[in-house]
Length: 144
Image (cartoon, rainbow, N blue to C red; front, side, top):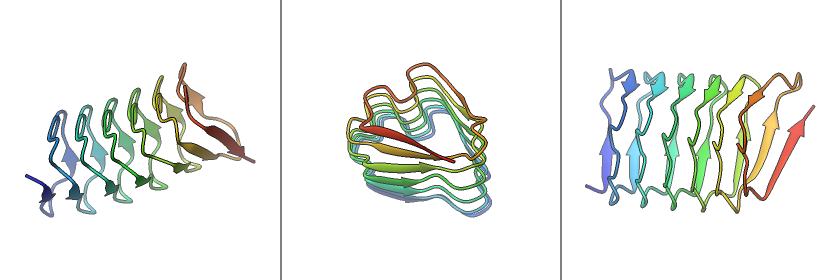
């Protein structure tokens, strides 16, 4: 299985839904999805890009951990929380903008993303950031 289109009407990508699908290179998530569960795409090491729909409000812990080929991802404005280890080991990511609405970033969320430059767009600096959330990242910049 190298690609998948999740059908319209799906609102949640549950825990471990695609865990370990190492041949998966692309996936289409419909606009109705509001949450991405824990371990949803963990270990999808061939996944290169993914568009998270605007309706998503939470990204579960370990959701994309080990997606080492992931080169781009856009976190939509509606996301309020990014779980622990969510993008851990996504070593091919180079830039991510975390939108203003995010109020929680879990511990080790971006650990091991060595090439990643993160921009946090939060003028109020009211983001709860877990320990080592950006461990090993290239840079973190807070916009004011």
